[in-house]
Each structure stands twice: as structure tokens, then as C-alpha cells.
Image: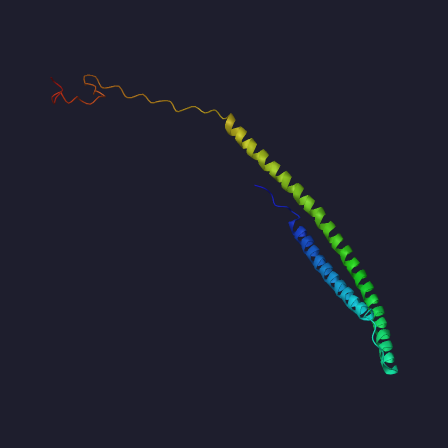
Length: 168
């Protein structure tokens, strides 16, 4: 019977930590994509084609809109950089959690190999012991000798042509 891996509880904990780190990494990457998409949308707004300006009020409105979009782009750039840093930290945390789990997984694998080898060895020892035991079939028992003066019954049944009593 194989022994259980003594560090199985710690391995489950490491896997749970790895799963948590993977979730945080996925969340950070999602926030980074959202910020990059918002920045791209703002950039497209800024790069929109020329607008036919008909008067000074419209020129002032277009200038204010572009200035606001540039300010928003600057904010989105800062947000994107912060989200990139968060994603890098989450990636590093996931890598560390994965390394901790891999070490224990290798120990568990080695334990499984050694345990299987031990089980096979025990089985082989038992088989060798069984093979070395001498086995002899039981001696046949002799049939008891008939008592003196009694006829021995024939092992063959009487033939149909023989009359009852065995005389012809």
C-alpha cells in the first residue's frame, strides 16, 4: 500500500495561492486592456477628420474639444502606465506562486515513483517467498484391504446377459 504524500496539504495550499495569483493577473490584464481601449477611443476622437469651421464660436468649440481630448489622453496614458505596472506585479506574483508549487509538485512526483517502486519490491518479495516454498501433492490414501473370506466386489457392473446372482 502506497503511503500518502506527507506534504499534500501544503501542495494544495500552494495550488490555491497559484489560483489566486492567476485570478489577480487575469484581473490586472483585463483592467489594462480596458484602459488601452479607452485610450485608443480617445485617440481616434482626436484624430477625427477636419471639421468645416464656419465661425469663431465653432473654432473655439473645436479647440476646447481637442484640448480636453488631449488632457484625457494624458490621463489615460497615466492610467495605462499604472495598469501596466500592476499587471507586471501580478505577473511576478503569479510566477513566484507557480515556482513554489512546482517545487512541491516535483517532490510529489518523486514520492509517487519511490512509493510505486517500494510497492513493486514488496510484491516481488512476497512472490519470491511463495515461489521458494516447497509444494508437494497430497499422498494418495490406500483403499482398505477386504476382510478375509469376503468376495471383493467387481468394479465393473454385471453384464446384461449375466443372470441375477452372477451365475451363468
